[in-house]
Length: 381
Image (cartoon, rainbow, N blue to C red; front, side, top):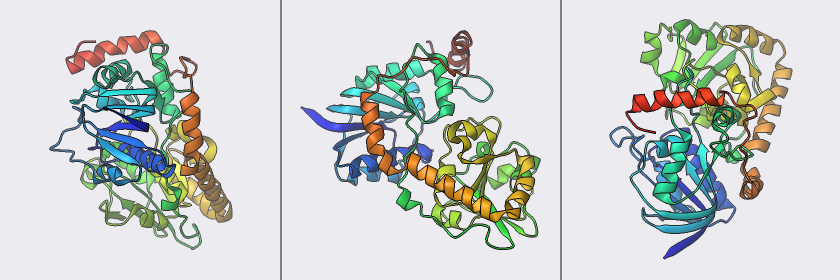
C-alpha cells in the first residue's frame, strides 16, 4: 500500500537545537495550512543515543492535525518532500523506505566547509544516500546565503533550489516585549544552547562582546561557563542562567540589546536565536559574518567595537528603538508563518539552479578537499 500525502518530512528526532526547531516550525506551518503530512524519523550515525535522546518537541509533531508518523519501510508519495540536515544522510541512516515525490529537497542546515576550509561533508554523497535508502532524487535547499555560497562551490555537480529555505517562525510565539533603552541602565545579553563554539575564542573577546559595567547589566541564558573561564573570561559580573531557568521569550524581554559573536572555527548556518531576539523587539548587535544571512536589517561590529556601539545607542535611544522595530517587522515578513504557503508554491515550481555565481571556493579546490575528507573519515568516495 502506498500512502499519499501533500508533504513528506524526514529527519532524525534526536537533534536538540535549531535543526529540530526549524523542522518543527515547518511541520506546524504545513499543518496550519491544512496539508496532509507524512513524518518519518530516521536514525543517523551522525548522532548517538547515549548523548542525544529523542527530542520531545520532535516526537510531539505526530500529534498535530494532518500529521501521520510513518514507520521505516513505508511506501509513500507526496508532491514535495523535505529531508532535514545533510550530515544525517552523509553519515548514513539505518532505515530504508520507498518514497516518491515530484520535488525532494535536502534542507541544508549546515555548511559543508568548516571555517578552516576543510570539508565536513560531501553533499553529493548525502544525495546518493537519500536516493539509495529512501528512493528520492533530491536537490539541496540552503537555509541561508552563507550556506548557499558554500554549496555553489559544488555546482554543477549538485542542483540547488533557486530560493533559500530559511527557518520559519510562529511569530505569535515571539511577541514584542517592553520598550528598550527606556531607563538610565541598560541590559545586554544573549541566549542559546550551551556550546563553546558559539562564543569568541579568547577571554578578551568574550569580555568585550558583553562588557559589564556600573550601568550595564549582562544576562546570559545558556552558557558554557567552565569552558569560557578556561579561556580566561571573567564572568563574575554576569548573571548566568541555566538554559530552561527562564523561557527564551521571558529572557529576551529582559534585554535591551541582544549581542552575538562567535568562535572563528564556527560557520553559523543561520542564527535562529538572532531572529528570535529581533521578533521580540530587541536591538541586535551582531558578528559581521552574519551579514551574509540577514543583510542590512541589523548592525554589525567586532567584539572590541561593542562598547563604542553601546555608547552610540544610548546617546540616541529613539533611533535605536526605530531600528529594532524595523528589524522586527522585517523578520516577521521574511520568516513568519504567513510566508510559508507562497514559499511552498514557489518551491514546488522551482526548476533549481546549477549556477556557480557567488561560489566561495573554485571547483578544482573543492574537489581537492574530498581527499582530506575521506582520508579523515576512512571512507572511499
